[in-house]
Image (cartoon, rainbow over all chains, first blue to last red; front, side, top):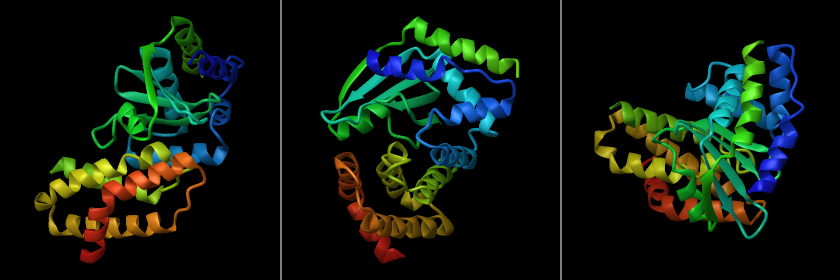
Length: 147
Length: 95
């Protein structure tokens, strides 16, 4: 789990932005591709859970800044997924390379992460999120608040 | 019922964005959505029921036409086929 966390942090520690557009452009690079990011934005807009790209960025960073619990779904092959949750209402899921796979609001139409991946044969490991991890995202959240 | 509309919308959006590379975690919610709608089919109005059947037909087409690129996608597709096979078949007939 620590190695994935380190990869996530290495991708965000250099975060700098002078405008909301720059912040969104940086955020998009945390995803597999710009297209993947845009498709997720469109879907979350259609779901009515975000108001725009910047709101998506803020909700994702807020989740990571407040994350109290993580769940690692470990696979024999290289499909590991790491899920962070904050206050139980927003989730961010990374792959083993520290790339964001998805970021979404919790609702009853979705299957719990652990149930979903247990069905696919993953071994689950739960734990408390390190304060140092949260601090990095709290610092990004503070920068976003000034834009 | 508000909940039924919510499940129907979630199912619709998952099919509109059916992509195992970009939305695998979302795609894995489909069996739960289908099961909920199937269990509450009597509560669906005619329009909602028709949409549900049409979505089931679309799901059947997507499952037939999607080639998994790795073992994880293969497992996910198998899960969808196992859980949804009855509903997909029923939907196919009804649509």
